[in-house]
Length: 472
Image (cartoon, rainbow, N blue to C red; front, side, top):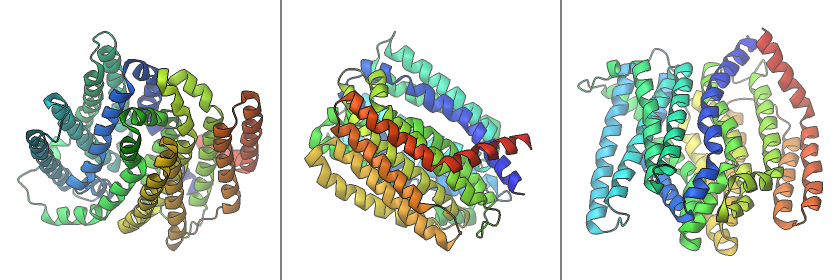
């Protein structure tokens, strides 16, 4: 029985690794292109648009994609209702965006020009449609199609970025268009493969299903906004105190932590499916405790390794004035670590349909984030934003860890984990205060080995479990 759970999880992890490798890791190596062709101001402008879309999406759609995912996981639920309800909310939100942007342009409050207003609408449309379609496809467990579509979208996006930025010299507009057209190819592929058009019945009522989906998704609006605050609200505070160019440098700092983000993104998508399918409040076979231990072990070691390699990777990836982004990388990497662990624990709340607990923990983290940003950014600039982000994710993780005990009995070595997190903090501080490279690596290297030693037992168990599962 337990082996079946591991096989199901590993199968989905493997398929999703394929798609995320193509999407995230390949784009990771294009960072030198972006930082050499785009200015810090241009990169900051794109990031500003992207983050603004991120906060509008859950509000204007009532976060319906989260409800679609959860109810799509129930095999007997009416798929036609899910597709129809989701499309209706997408169309309504698009009308609101167009009307709102028209007013802003007419009053002069949107001063980027009409072409960028059109790009903003296209960016919103792309993100809302991609989110809805991929969540639905994941919910109906078409993971293979999702993986293939991600590879296609990645190839198109990367090719168009290279063509638009180099031979055609389209600059920021080319960067926008490449990152709009690429994901839309994924939507087309998934819509065809999942036969979504056949499930779309705009003339049908579906009032009961709409109320059920919205009842689940509405509490998650606060959660999505809070996650947005935790992820990107610091960009606005950096812009306010330090300027758009500083935000461009701060934004590009997230490219190195994106390596760790690949791991958490792959696992979290697969984990949502497993946590709902195999939920067991008593964890009799230790599946959830063992998986948490292995996940925490893997994330912490990768996080420590990225901190050690920070300056080397920054020298390779960040051109010109972007190089100074290395200062923010360690704290943003730690933030992803805690965000990933918080996401793991959130899988239990999804399984029991407790969407309010999602919002409660994330909102507290968002309040902490804004408070620390307002204090730290004026004092130490973008570095303060990075530290605030790491702290707020740690708060969310701690709250969810305590609250999850109401639903499941996890057996974890919390003292060892906390000691490892302190070591990560020491590594990050050493990077900031030790200038001599030899002395720096004499500090970072042994601390990395110490973390590996702390998780030696989990490493052995993790490898043995994968080998035995694959053999069976």
